Image: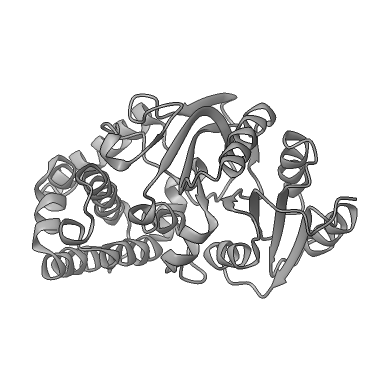
Length: 348
């Protein structure tokens, strides 16, 4: 077995809660795609599971002690598991792979070649970006989200060189591999027992990333179709309070027009934040929770008090107007527009 003292180029953190049925495929995809390399590290974070996940995690560590480590904790939710993996990571880079997802072997091999090249040349790259694929098992279809129209390829670049992102081209957790020190310095405000923390993960660290690299490879395979999945519309309606919690944390992270200097990054982050406000607006209309409309009114009020310029951009741009149409007929139109967008962009 390789020595655990081997320098690790990248750490893969796998948050795992009751993941016994899925985790083997996830872990195997990383091992096989890396050819069992000693310079990668896999940290399985057992988030207080009550199935066979803890035992399986320990078995994987026993089989590959120089590569795999098992971390056990009381249940804290996805965000706390992500932070636990980050705390334990020794790799130069850190990538989260959820336990029911997996990585493409050929694309992973390419990524490791690129990251090793950075290490060998002493080149600092703060953020490595790759494509991800929606694996819609119930439909038997694949939907690839790539960035070739928005990002330069085969070169290290800065935010000043990025193009325009389409509505379906947000940089999500699945597409991001940060330098570990960048993530730690970001002091990610990931709340416990809360879904949708991946939005914070894909937003808050971005201004700290000064150098970026985009590889046009379909690395991350994102499993879509499990009943009760967090991106399922019915589930999102049920967890609307958590969506508001995440959006408030993002709101308070930056005064974008004062604190984020690169104009193209600021524009991208404003668009992303506006999307989060729009999701709150749409799902408030889909919800039968009598408090939902009050939550929404208070959120818009607080955004205006926090930063009037961010408020104006979010509320009176196309998305803000389209998701806050007045009257009952306006609500129906908003919901119809949302369902049309979900069919076009296939985001859930």
